[in-house]
Amino acid sequence: MSVTPLSAARPDDALDPAAMRQPLPDAWYCVGESRLLHAKRLRAVALNGEQIVLGRGADGAPFALRDRCPHRGMALSKGPFDGDSLMCPFHGWRFGTDGRCRAVPTLSSHDAADFSRIAVQRFPVRESAGFVWVNPSLAPDSTAPAVPELGFEPAGSVVIALEVEASFDLTTLSLVDPGHVAFVHDSWWFRPSKELREKVKTFQPVTHGFVMTSHAATKSSPVYRLLGGVPDVEIEFRLPGVRLERIRAGAKRVANYTFATPLSENRTLLTNALYWSVPALNLLKPLARPLMRQFLTQDQQVLQHAQSGLDRKPTMVLLGDGDLPSQWYFRLKREALEAARAGRPFVNPLERRELCWRS
Ligand code: FES
Ligand SMILES: [Fe+2]
Image (tube, rainbow, N blue to C red; front, side, top):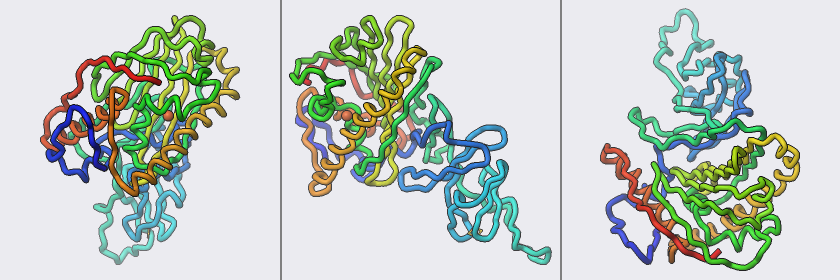
């Protein structure tokens, strides 16, 4: 992908363009809801072209292994898991949740073959905000951006996940792109007015990203009205593809989190989680689910069409303040890659700024 920023140009030759096209290798990616990981059950997921098998060990801790038996490549997720070891369904080799080969049942007592050094790749895994996060990089000195935390005890939540046939970058840009909202998300319940209005918002850098704070949210939005009072809204973008919208009205808290996960080069998972602290909002759960699905489907459709355009010609023109957050995404990503390559700490290249656009 070549991007033409029409302002603040920066030489693009500092980094291999192929690396810029890849999702960040050393980062935590959302691979699904925590509640879907049950004892004695395995789950197969895709992450950045890799097949991964997820499970929960006897101690309740999640584990993530490459979903490939070293013997002849069989998917370990297709075999049984007794809570302690996974058995490959092809020839019965057994592996611990740490990936080490524990038994090769076809070996006789006369066979001197040693299987103790055979292991399946194990990936770092974490749980946070109701999700499982896997870091596909095996760097021992990882400096990956922190996994998102929720910061309050939710009374309820709704999660919607959709696969988008588009690259990770294009999908992630939609998380920081104010310009598409009026055109793509034009449902009555989200945008009662069709008019474009001038917006002025202050953005400041935070660790591995940037945040927009505003103190007088659009009162006309029925979603906000449900909370009562004038809510404070804070929207953070954080590498690799994480958007954290936090809404506070007095002691009431709502969080709307969106995560992009690269499944393969041209498939990205978009996960949207809405959490609230007020038990009364549980009544709206049946309503929230279809609306959130509609919202995410709007992104999915437009991203897929845009991807076919980019497939024909992989260039973008980023124009005006409304496209600055998109440029910032690429700057943050470039800095993360350069810092990793040089073995130095990440330094956020962004500055506090006011942006004006119409949306
Ligand atoms: S392929 Fe797994 S045991 Fe043979
Ligand atoms: Fe969107």
